[in-house]
Length: 524
Image 1: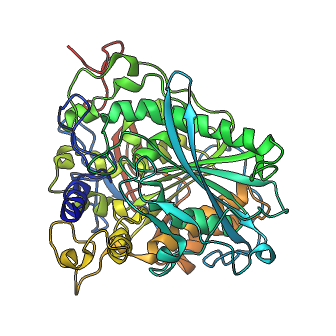
Image 2 (image 1 turned 30 degrees about the horizontal axis):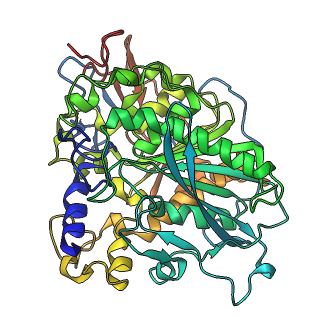
């Protein structure tokens, strides 16, 4: 059993998601996950740096350098005014634990609407340090909230490998109500893979709720729905959880009563959770019209008929953060509808290419543009793109530290797999971006700067600039716009910047991404 758990994790993680199971309920085979990685078909720009300018055979090609001005920054066009961000304040040090202690509570909610499914959610919230005593228990983190097959880990177990402390069930701080940040995991990922976001943001005055979506193959015994079914279910899961948390917020005697400000709700997600974020922020006209899972041989046509329905935006969401999100499932015009502040974080073009260069997804020549494409479509002054130069797709989750924690709890023999080359979470003598605390610090720092500026009580917009990144964030490439005039943009194309001083062009909707209207996901 122990070896089976580790082997399943190591092998299936190579295909972009976190899932452990590779079969649908009907027994057909799929690959667990839908996150952004693979060959981007890059060429060499005139600046001498590899980028992803080349598209499919009939696609546009342009790779140009953007002139550098006297201030040693790129001369670029400004996007149309969509409401300027607040005046720049003094940049805070958001890299450290905030002033609050952190509480935690888990819920198993039951959606009895059209979705008729349970939804597990883990919530972190601010606590006044004075209310925590020596007998306050550490936070309880079940490995699998949908079964009793695994033990419950605690905050103490995770603190031992470098994560922030949290306590189980203390009274929330009276300084609220606080903004709510919803987080949707990657396909097949567990909620605890994002506890670093929950604990750090809660210490700075946010309530953070991370869902765990049912039937996504998180463990060998977990059922696994197809990707399109997951897409259909996820938006309903998150909106349902928001409703339930706000009911608890309004209910006298509930732990979270009065803790959440319903006017300040943000949405975030990693990988397929990034799709969930885009969909809830702007809506999707028809979930099933994506050909991408079938094109990548991750799923077979036809998709279930009930998935040929819209995913409606949730108007309660006021800001969004995508973490290497799966934007390929949304049409360019759907992304362009987003009208709330947005932070789009992810890998660089080169890391997106290399991460899955040997996988099924390597045939997607547009995959290197998954982070720039939504930023180009949104085209607003309150939209920002952050490329983390030391990250790959799984750097935004904490899967690798699971080996250590489970090993110490006697569930898995971590030591047997430290030097394996199959999925090397740790490789002696080389840098491993998947297990890099610096990436997690960048993620939480930029999330806090963005959320503080648009939802919080502080103005940290000074940190949302290229000058801040160049001075204080050597592992970040920052973009406030994709606009550039060095490439000619034809009908159906868009310009983007592979790197800050480069310009390239690509198709808005690659031909193998979407089915013709009314074709039920391209089914014959």
